[in-house]
Length: 112
Image (cartoon, rainbow, N blue to C red):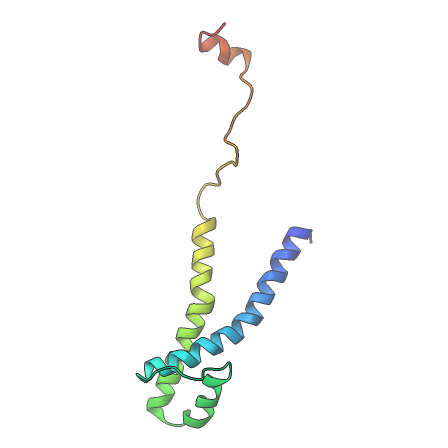
């Protein structure tokens, strides 16, 4: 594995781990929003605490599941789509495609 590939793999692994906690945080806030309340005192474990407290209630379980989905989509799927769209397409050269003209091209242009 070369250096660039190793760095990319390392960054992705760190993002997955940090993203898990970010998704938990976003899911906690999303749960408040889904319940039409003002998000207050959100922490990384907010969603988990509400899951433990209200996970048995079918209505709240649906809202908690929706909040977890929102957190996962916002943290993992949206950045993935942005990166894929940004790296898609033709790569443009940094300084154009300048090169020295060949003798044939000079004659064809009538410069010689």
